[in-house]
Length: 182
Length: 234
Image 1 (cartoon, rainbow over the protein chains, first blue to last red):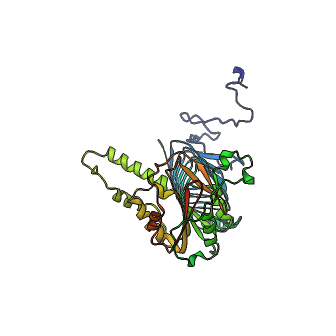
Image 2 (image 1 turned 60 degrees about the horizontal axis):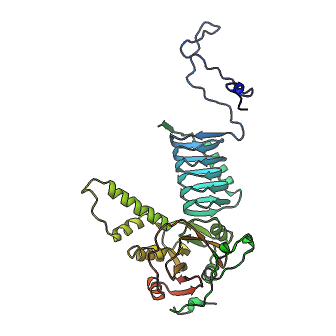
């Protein structure tokens, strides 16, 4: 595994992505020129278990929604609504937003209300200022919480989240995300 | 057992604190067993709030899974605010602000009274009569003389009529800093913790009763471990 011969070899399962040459546009069979790709944005749904990450040094302002699991090690402000997903705020993560998710794990700092349809866990070293609403809550020694804890019945929040999602699907989506890399 | 109707008394009840062996702490060496105390104060606190449906509890100590679970399973809603830590952080912040301010700008000495008022502008911010019970633990031992009456006033206003406060007072300077959690309806666990603040005072019984003078009724219990429990009814 650590031998030199293995280094640099690509994994057989790794998707092979060939970036188009942005400088010399290729000629199409019809004689036209294909526009160079600027950025590859994956449009296929994420594999189950895969999590999107807001990594350290990245700052997001706005509303974050979606179905993928999310890890936040950077900064996020606004609101996070991911009713079917797991949201994790890492040790370096700082969030100033209400978080609504299936499962919420906090290791970093959060100013905002947490609402989870399954569970909320506050890890050692986490700092939360806001209310917790969930059927199950786990608080490790050393966690800091300033706010109220309200337990709900399992499924109660799921139903209200589903109703909320249906309502928001009817309305035109107004998503504004500003990302700045420090 | 209707002590609500009883007049306030100044004497102390019999010694009640003692180490107990709990099944959940079987591995419990003697050291850990010594940190578990039977609490008549908690027992009566639970009795006082037992009639309240969907009652709300304010825990002013460090958040604890055991305490939360205990109250939530009984149907209460719990709010928690690590009050002493917030106070210490506030003081550190103010000190830092003054240190970094240019000379002559906001560096005039601020009195403890102003600091206490400023701190309470952002702490214990709940609507009046929000809570049926407050777990104050041993916080009052660590407050200065300016903060203490202000906190007391605020707690009084936050309590529902007939709400109660459970507070602990060391009868001699605490040897080390502890945090507290509820183990069961009459047992409190004392967990050694890094020192957050220096023990500021030892209350005499009369001082405790004066501090809680606005309350309708007071009751204190002294344990063998020199920890006095006070239960105060609005």
